[in-house]
Length: 132
Image (cartoon, rainbow, N blue to C red):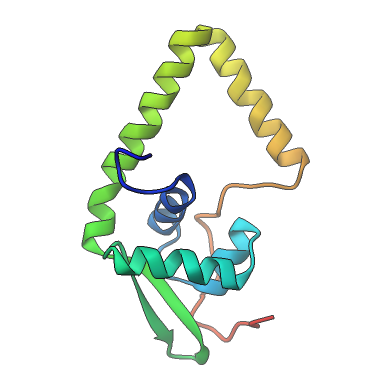
């Protein structure tokens, strides 16, 4: 991800916001299973870079809504290209069948350990949300 200018975690946040749309920082932190403070630090860097915006939740002033900017949306193609390049490198190194098997095993392990891909489906995040 260095050629895109982001950390892997930052790229994942950009990708999640593309799928989720406008979402509270608290919800985004929950989706990534990290603290609200850690998500706040990460989103601050993405805001500074111009990839996302943060606004006060109109229904809960102690909560912030984050979403992609046009610049962030444009970055998606570079992120996806970098991820495709990694997939190609793995397939070239291991062979297509082993690479597919590795991907399947990795997903199963992630799921078994309680991990998940941040959801594209959401409830209305502008509703009042607990900040705990």
